[in-house]
Image (cartoon, rainbow, N blue to C red; front, side, top):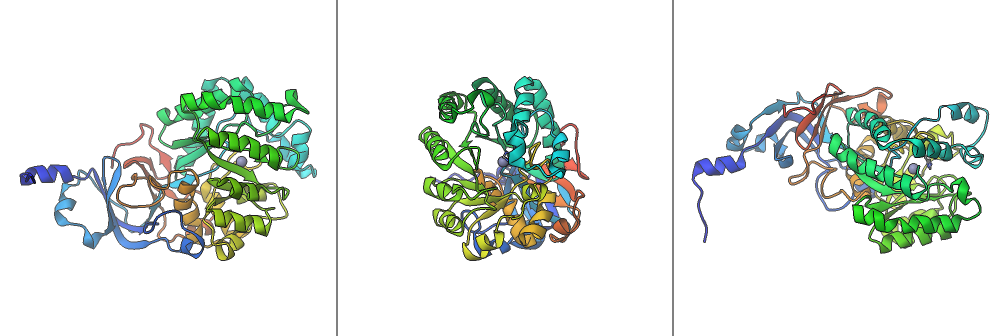
Length: 441
Ligand code: IZC
Ligand code: ZN
């Protein structure tokens, strides 16, 4: 039986908490799944668009002219974007967010010609951050990560992936993962956790990599019991972990229900891309050294390629990831990430990565936007919740200080963020965090 509501009730049900008007929307809407190949160029512009929000979710998105007048009048707050560009909140799908200390001392080593892997092999690099992170309290780690999250949010990042991997033992890995989980309660950016236990071989396990992997595999039950990670990852690289070791670890993680990611073929062509395809990984990350057949296998397997041009730039690598091959030939879904970490890429700014993607990877502004929103969301299992402006998705939005998307990668090194809404709440205004988390409007 159909029960009719009195008109006043209908209005109450439909009331909007927030209505954003006069935005130039890049919606990234239409179609299921990540955008692959040439479809990455279609960002779904709506000129003079409006977005209606209720209970933190998008309930209307479209041309202002199509907005029902009655619905418009229900809005508790109307917010005028003044014609500026509005995109989905940015998603950063690869970071090493939680760590202690910094490694500016490695700059001089790099300038004197020492490579990233040489610094690691000499006990520095990742291992120096491991020492600092093992010594830090959960409070110290939370504080340092919060500073970075604030920078990320002020630059438009509303969802971020965070890897462990600076503990390399039971207590310190769990400590890092607990901090990442707790960060969701104390600030606005959503943190999606990845267990990267095999990030490097700690000195106490020299010559016993397989035993170390056993210890990391034994952690999986605790990680599952406390809900500490959705994904697992491994640094599959010459002198770090081999393809066979990576296969063993990641397979064990899959058996425990974690999705898998791989640091694949960053420096040497080990075959990480092929392994990611074989395992049906959610993403394969880095890839500058990957073979053409490895990249094509990834495409076949529907893996998202997460490219990190800030890292290849900062390491002064001879080669960058082959984004044009991935998009034009392999028709892959490409995402971009900061790789924020204290060694190979110390920046929280996805906007800077957008500039690198244009200059180093030859990606168009539209492909770049797709790569830091929709495709990035799919790279961390959040493609149905965030990454586009569509009815039913979380109201995570960036209102930029420009109308033109190309202006963002073109004018690099400064913050173009105006206002950020997280779940419909204004959290950043004029590129600055609102101290109390912000009210709507
Ligand atoms: O701390 O150097 N590449 N892991 C693999 C990193 C960079 C993070 C680091
Ligand atoms: Zn990484």
